Image 1 (cartoon, rainbow, N blue to C red):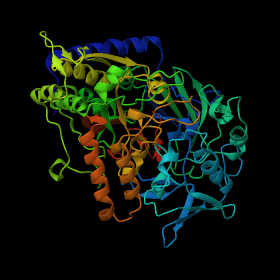
Image 2 (image 1 turned 180 degrees about the vertical axis):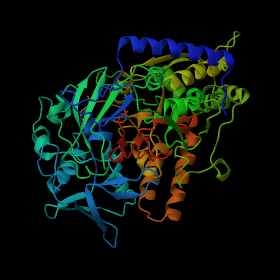
Image 3 (image 1 turned 90 degrees about the vertical axis):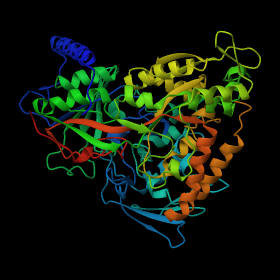
Length: 603
């Protein structure tokens, strides 16, 4: 069992007791408040938490996890959280033609939107043709479904009110996975609510859709097809979701949860305080529980009436990446300082950084031994994951190797041990991450210390999550970022990150629909090779035939280091005993992936 040093345990306990008392005095507990209007009858209620406000209620513009789409929207198919198996969802069945280029989905009968309007094949065609495939809409999923060398999108044909056929330019093995809804894949959107905003253009020629269903929209206007609809949103406080009576699987649980309260917490520490004081029903459901909390919560399981679940290795990963973008903005100014850009685009520089980060120290000190090194861009649960003993390049901790690499690339050291480039410029840059995530804040602090040992001056700056996403996906004005990415068993699920045209290709983000013009953008040779490998791998349906392509992809990433992987966390989640039906392991990005099946006993 993990043990904290005595001084650390006493200090943490004192802080937690003090903060818990403050919470109690403030009277902010939600426990026991789950009454219907008039106070006559209790409502089955689940109280959860997230670290950030939603940036948008518009699925096509969403680039964050977690998001409201976990609760509110569904796709044609879904992935079973415990196995990754593709199962029916809005579509009750599908057929694949013998040549594997036609997939015909049959929708469930009598599907409805939350406002009572029928959900038909027209909504499916609208979602794919008018939104996802729209060149003026920066939908992440568009790049996932571009097929072959010519990057052709599928043709979507309505056969009748319940049947839709997708015609592909070539076989595409990840197609069913791409239709599987949240947290990472395509959901179906309501044509009757959004069609007009797609068709109408603003003064710049962009669809009004790009400014539709922002987080400032009245939740009543958001029409959904998932198990819950948004009832209320109070920025920086909470979202309240109410069970959608028109959801096709509303009877998945004998006594389904009627209401979900999603509290917005300022940090993981405040999440822990809320959980220990009884205000939360789960912690660690959207990101693994912080390891230093493990012993505290494990000791309190019986008294606190909750269970700490260990799901094995988590499918998500954590990494740092440098801004390799050498393009210019509309004013002709480079996104990255040209001096820094030369450093970041030096392979020797990135390799030196990889050798200088002490991941074992991270595992022992920050994760309390509850994690393993991460070397592959694929989740360890994926059958396509390549291991070091199978030829995956790795970067052992070695300051000597790091210094030698830097000096071989023309960097030099001052008499005081400060790293300078060949022109005498001091090597210094800013590392950002999302504030409030204590694990990432601790990782960033260690990275700053580690890189100081090879003479680099790193300014570590945790910032608001939405500001962070804006820098990465819009303004592109950043040096280095510490961030995570969701994973799974299907390699193509990460196509938005790895394809050079992807909207999550953060380390060298290409021009995106709806953004101001940029010039001088180019993909490197190795980025183009990754594109080709993904295209070739997607054509193969047999695992043995697909795997060599994804082996090459993993080797390329580790050789070129567009991202430097850190550790693979262990999936830990604590849930109240009154929550029934939990199915947890490290594979799904969200621990409560089967929320529509959960039941909550009233306290």
